[in-house]
Amino acid sequence: MVVPLPHQRLGLDPVPELIELQKAGPLHEYDTEPGMDGRKQWLVTGYDEVREILSDATRFSSMRPVDDEAERAWLPGILQAYDPPDHTRLRGTVTRANTVRRIESLRPGAEEIVEECLDDLESMGSPADFVRNAAWPIPALIACDFLGVPRDDQAELSRMFRESRESRLPRQRNLSGLGIVSYAQKLAARKRHDPGEGMIGGIVRDHGDEVTDEELAGLAEGIMIGAVEQMASQLAIAVLLFVTHPAQMALLLRERPELVNGAVEEVLRYASIVETPSPRTALVDMRIGGRDIHAGDVLTCSILAVNRARGDRFDITRENPEHIAFGHGIHHCIGAPLTRLQLRVALPAVVRRFPSLRLAVPEEELRFKPGRPGTLRRGGASR
Image (cartoon, rainbow, N blue to C red):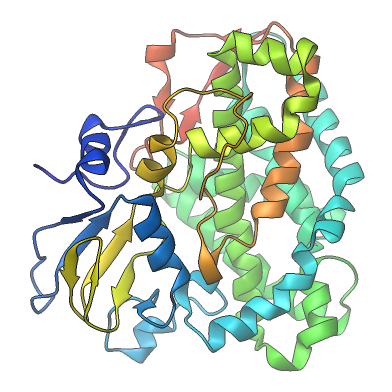
């Protein structure tokens, strides 16, 4: 059987070949790539095997298999690129900022941001581009509050977030991406002298001596670039799911609004934005999922296949929408509480403000971002 790329989709759905692989067994071998010195590559589609691999940092490394330390250090502060003990040290610096209590304290500000963005969307009339005018600015501004970005900088930084991923001009994407990196460095330097509010300032106050300037900027950059894009994609896809499942939208709007938390988990499970976490490299020989794995083999875990296999129908009344959309183990996404807060605030607001929301184009004409088929590039909405 041909092994598809683990991120391949048809719209929001995994390609049929991926589902067939998931049914056929938990591990599947790729062809060995040139230059990998005989190391095998494996696609992991079994739920238990994915959890086992992601939770075991003693047998599996998340660092890329390279020999050049300079190459390995190109992303200081990006947690996915670290193994213990450095990962443990850095992760500990951001834990306090991501507690349930801390994230819940952001709710009033998040509610204000959502209402203001939806006001802007409504003022544009119909049809309107939901992705550009709501799905991007809402998470960008919420993330700015979370990080402690001054209000005067938020609009410009929000624009750079969107253009770094959405601009059709490569030069503009590159300039905006470099602008975000530069701003993260300036923000880290500013917080060293005046911590103020937000995650970066909290790290400086509580763990300043444990984190280098480069790592501090990297932590900010990781939220700015990675988390905002994923949160924007997740919000856009969540709204698309409800628009294309009107009975589920009616449940959330009128009949059972108390289902919002379960609805958020079902959205995360059914349309996992992150198809795979960073690949893991086996550190020792072992047997897993009935296959012999050797030290140096590279394993890619398909969150997309595993989550969808737990239910192929979108149903917000599902009693236990168990999923691993945020990964598992030591690299479980630190942004999970913030993403949940955004969806729990934004989804009810969208369906309440726009109860007749519908697509402005036929569903088959929706465009998805090249290279990330589960991510909407642009999408009109009519009310």
